Image 1: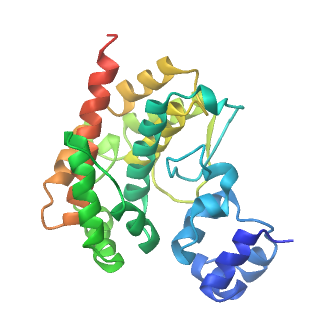
Image 2 (image 1 turned 180 degrees about the vertical axis):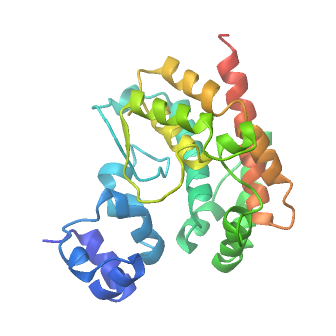
Amino acid sequence: MREDSLEEAIKAVGGVGALARALGISQPSVSSWNRVPSERVLEVERVSGVGRSRLRPDLFGEARPSLALAMETARGKVDDAAIDEMDRLRAAEYGLLALLLFKVPTAAVLKQVAALKGDASPLGLAHLALAEAAADSSFETVDREFFDLFIGVGRGELLPYASYYLTGFLHERPLAEVRSAFVALGIIRGDESREPEDHIALLFDVMSNLAMRTIGDGYEAEKAFFATHLQPWAARFFADLEQMRDRPFYAAVGAVGRLFMEIEEEAFSFDA
């Protein structure tokens, strides 16, 4: 029997056949599902508007507010009560940025971003600016921004990969180092995208998991991953994104990311 959330997604797009066509797979494949496979959660969310926490609460429930990407990990049991509230907030920040940078956010996601709250701190004000940008944007305008920035005709305006920012080329040593880190952390890619593992969204998803202690051996593993795979380049990427004034939604994403990276770098430096 299909789970209610899968039925909801099927009805939202107009039937099993319509969902299969939207995903680019065969109708029998979808017909065989009892629930949405982990590697299809993001795609089903995108085409149906049914949120991932509803589609797969076991992967994206309240214990994982980070809106993380579809990755199968070697997950152990985590005592949620033992997770510090600040780490929960950090995981959510990493997860939100990962979501916005990996694929075009759906109209439902834009609505959620438009509801972001903030305060008088620099990051809080950046959240408010991002919320305003989301409220002022349609799915179509954000889709165009995303295409121009990260896909383009031949190549996008920005390349969000560690290899490119650190060497000037894709698929270089930083990618090999990320892949080795994935093996050490017990991470097995569950999504079907062809994005290299050094894409900033995938790295942020790992940081979200590390902050929630669903992977890794605690703080030292988190600090080491950040220092090796994000600190050398992520703030520069977000600064470049922030300068894209003719892409107002993603310029606001860039401001949030840059400030968050500065905060993270300072926090990890306290015990240096």
